[in-house]
Amino acid sequence: MRVLVVGAGGREHALVWRLAQDPAVTSLLAAPGNPGIAELAECHPAAIDDVAQMVSLVDHLRPDLVVVGPELPLVGGLADALHARGVVVFGPTASAARLEGSKAFAKDLLQRSGIPTARSGSFDDVEKAIAFVDELGGRAVVKADGLAAGKGVVVAPDRDDAIVAIRSCLVERSFGAAGTVVVVEELLEGPEVSAFALSDGERAVPLSLSRDHKRAGDGDTGPNTGGMGAYAPVPSVDAATEAAIWPMLDRTVAAMGAEGTPYRGVLFAGLMLTADGPKVLEFNCRFGDPEAQVVLPRLATDPAELFRACATGLLQDRRIRWRDEPAVSVVVASGGYPGPYEVGLPIEGLHEAGAMEGITVFHAGTALDDAGRVVTAGGRVLDVTATGATLREARDRAYRAAASITFEGARYRRDIAADAAEEEGA
Image 1: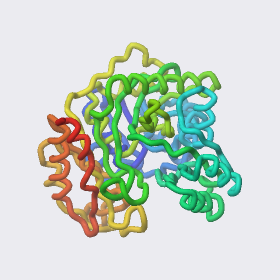
Image 2: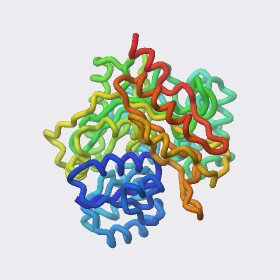
Image 3: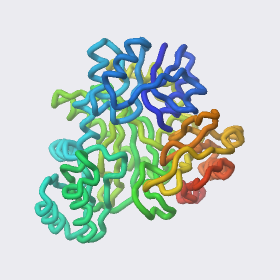
């Protein structure tokens, strides 16, 4: 099978890395890829947000399967354009990808379908949004409706913070078109968990639970980011809680189908485990990043045929197998991230880290300079991922490897999976 992976980040490197191990994959391509991906796949320059350019490239490369990694081309209609040419695509259509592309759409679907979620309202008027915050008692979560690279969410513990967040979106246009509508919802209490399933338009087949760390600083302090690390499985989630989660994703797929927008691809639900049970916070229309970097290394079922079955509506009776080893991923970020940061800084220690037992280093924001050196090219630069017999062992390995990688300003959280490793041994 000739497979093309669309994207350039750590999630796409993880997809390419796992597909490269699949004996059914005879040719592996990427667009645009990155220096890490280029070690495994033939990379072709292309802009992920340029649908016409991607379609032209696919016409030229003629893959048997296109795996779309990031949300931007999916929300922009890449799957639709490729379907029109008879290409098999792992990823939802633009109408189905609205589950991520519009938080207001997703909340409305949840509420109409009776799927547990936080009380919420959608607003394009500042005063009406503030009035709803007051209805909620002054504490709220304020979200930009559209795509904001994981940064359009503000947890506001008091009325003043909520007002600042609302004005930031609706008045200051901090998130551009993504913030012309804000979703204001009640602030739920409890641990968060990420749930991944595959959908072929008819059913949601469970994949894995994982947990990521969104805040920039240790102890979940500082601003939200795209994710500073992740781990899987999640030992604190008991069997009864997990059993309550998967039917919520299945009901979501059924609701989408009933409305004439069948969902095919990865369905990723972010959930809060409240005292009243799991509640959906939001959806994503693709693998999480950095969650993919801990989910895919544990996937024992070869992915190419699995993704193709998902794309063609043939997931029934598919058995998905998992490796027993837990996985932990630590994001090595640029100094200043998620604020301004410098790029083009040489990275040292990649080979040494990658040679350590149980370690895979996924490139998230890297490039090659004119001298052929790997340099920083983004806020989240590398995902140092480790597997081990236990979460504690995987975590220790990940941090040893992360410590061996250096570039000016490099930083990472020191507490990724710390609580989980303690829970595992309790």
